[in-house]
Image (cartoon, rainbow, N blue to C red):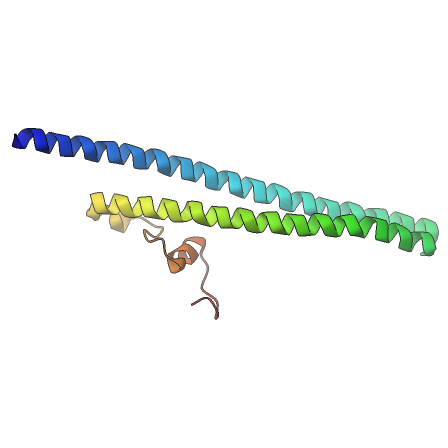
Length: 147
């Protein structure tokens, strides 16, 4: 009976480890996609700014900075402002999602150290999921108002 109970506990531990490894891989993939998405959106916005500046330079030369230049400027800056606001809003959302994924990975890393405590010293990134650990993972320090 004791052998059955021990084997059942070992099977459960193995199953838990496999589940955690699968979840770790899924969270890592999700973090990668958030970084890719944020980079793409930032590049799109920077490209838009560059295009608007070039267009303004052309129209400024052609109109000699007259009334058409100011009308054209308004026509270009309003959509650029909208793109900037929506880009900022989405990147903040992406950052929040990335933080959730990073916290999940840290929790799983903590689980790994609970299973095998000797491995804790080999982890470079933190195994805690509190705010300070999240900043440590990003290489940042808490600000004056964040402590």
